[in-house]
Image 1 (cartoon, rainbow, N blue to C red):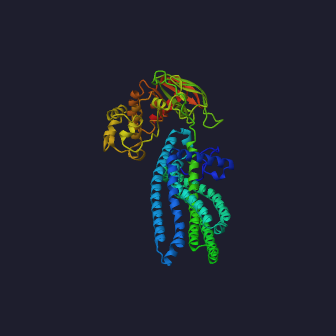
Image 2 (cartoon, rainbow, N blue to C red):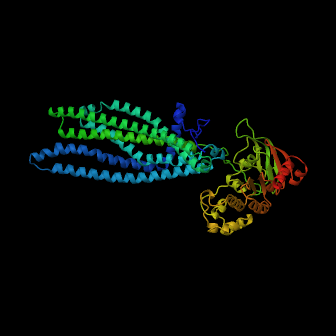
Length: 614
């Protein structure tokens, strides 16, 4: 029930791999390219609005960058007339322009934040929609290998990391870049000599930044990996809480969680250490540069080569020049976290279903399925070189009820999954009314073939909601008629709110037998041409089973049915029995005929009768 280590894919492309910092350089490049494609695709509809955002932030930064220059003008041009007694008009004008620049900066900033917030939320809305939709469309084989904890991690922590990037990261990056470029230009314009002195530490700063980028890329990917493992372990422990408590697994699970949690703490601590090192390093270089410029500028001012106002503006610009470096470091933290999340999300979104939709769907001969099923030279293996079905030729006429009997691993459920097209055959074809299932569109297939399993899932909501799950447009009357047909109406009517009773988490407020009856009603209401019952009566007690068996004769009438059951009481209602062994049909015929033939099925039937009498 727990996960103690990252899952590893057998393919570099596999999205189950979380150890992406261990991938070869070429693969890492492809992962980054893939994530950039996803981000570009999300941003593409907002190109014009993003251009407007850039314009707004340029205006805002221009207004902000003008203030130190205006201060120098006020000092050098506005104060001397006051000391000479000729008036303060220049200083008053400069102060007025500074106030106007501050207002422009504030208004532009507000406009930017509002527009950026709207764009960011729309991007996140689209990303969540894509991920959820794609997870639903991915084949059963994917979900059997991809843990539920990782699914939740993709839609929670990974989306949150991207949310931080689109909501605040873009703002910080554009503002910082414009400030750096604009400030560097203004430093050289104000005074070339002082500007060159101020830019002397720049190579050191760039090397320091490069080191930080390289280290943080590893650290932030590790952070995404460890948080995913924490979520996986937590989710799977809670999903399997009954098994955890039944086997007294709490202490061991706590030990595993403590280790995973500590790994996550360590990864976060490492990222904070890197951020703190970079930010304090930039601050130190900046302050030393300001001190050096002040010393050199003061000497130039004493020589009369630099005006006091220019020196003051220069120092203000230097402060603005180094502050964005810290913002860039924070943005890079966000970018690394979001980048790792984007790699995982883009991997999921580029994962192709193993049972894809046909490009050119073929219609059924009469528009609606009659229910004839044929296996034409079908071979299948979950794992290569370990065939479950070595070769199968089988025809099930429309309207026939067929029971599959055999030991565990004989291939019974595999047949059901192939008819439902949860998997495609390795070789051969599965046909419905003469049409290959691979050429049918998803809607036609799912309305024609329905499977009821041993552990049918009930969703949060009312009993009525769960019955109409496969046919949302069904009326209340149709829901009740379906329940009556399979014998569920009586117990549903006895619930506190009848059909409007909330079933609770996974139907936890109902017994196993009651949940199965609701699942039968759901299948009956969906009215498929082919109905598959995979151990569907195993959870029922004897009275409930007898009730369902009576209803099954009505449900299965004029409908093709595939019944997988170990209880031979369920098998007896079938028109035909197939005894399977190692993926092959070893006996085939009506139940009564096979019982009289003294073969495998006859032996099973005798053993069943003896168990009833004992």
